[in-house]
Image (spheres, rainbow, N blue to C red):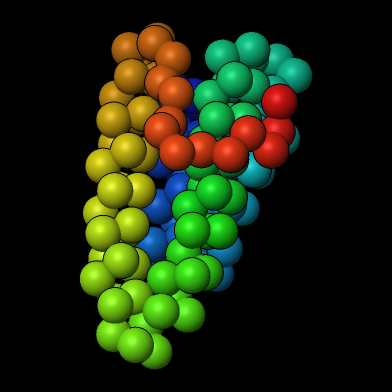
Length: 107
């Protein structure tokens, strides 16, 4: 259950909490990683994905000045939401999910 919450905590950033998409999974991962190995692996994966999505959003925001970035940012947001839901479902089933297009910062 906590492994699923590491993925779902990323939605904090979508409801208006600044950097909530990174802080939410980070808090759960830091609290539960020592006692639950599954939360450790899912937390790292969720954090890596959220950091990567945040990095990918920077050029989209810059390109918004030429109107292309709005479409890219919307596509990135939809992609992130779908991936978070898929990862949360797999974590709830006890399976591991590897996000695509993720830079592995935390190993």
